Structures are given as structure tokens and as C-alpha cells.
Length: 147
Image (tube, rainbow, N blue to C red; front, side, top):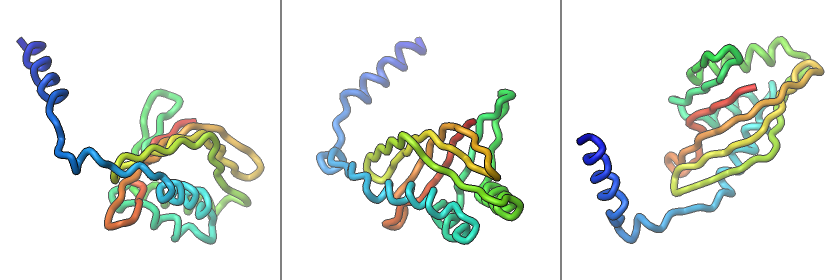
């Protein structure tokens, strides 16, 4: 019975036509790419306050840990960890490689390989940024990453 209901619901969604205006969605990624560039460019001790402005107040950072657990941080927790890192590190930065940005309307994602550099050592990982256009500006809503 449940399968029949799910099948009918899927069919109804698949055959439903959206209004013509909703079918035209923006896909230009230049503004999103600019935020992604700032995400790396402002990731400096002297620009960290400016870096924080890239994020929505409700931003969350979620990391997949090696032991199978997951760590979720609010913007304040995530920012605080970065500020502490810059306060104690002699050098700290991040670079992105193989960046793929996708935009549909006011939503976007950016997937990338990253290299985190700190005090002469480097760690490689993978990240995904979710972004949303709010009040005419693109903001980072979430970050997923793992090393």
C-alpha cells in the first residue's frame, strides 16, 4: 500500500508543470565564484572579520571525523576555532583545487579539494559549500568537509 501511495505521489510530481516564470532560473556562477574566492582570500589573520561576513548568521560547519563521528559547529564556534588557530599559528592558510560551482536560481554549491596549511605542514581534504542569495548578496549557509 505504501509503495502504491509513494508511486502515485512520484508520478504526480513528475507530471506537474511549473508556471513558465518558475522554469527560467539563473545559472550564472560569477557572483558565487567571487564569494568562494573571498572564502579563501579573506582567510587571513588580518582579514578574519571580513571573512566572517561571508556567512549567514545561521551557518553550520559539519565535519566527518576519521573515527566515524561528525562534528557540527555554529558560526560562532567555527569562527572562534579559526581565530584561535590564527592566534597561535606562525602561518595558516587554505587553498582550493578542482572547484566545481553549480547554481540554480538563488541556490548554489561549490565542491572543491582543499589543502590546509599550518606552520609548514599541509593536510588535504574535500569540502562542499552551500550558498544562498539573500537580500541580493550571496552568503555561505553551510560547510561540509573531511580530511
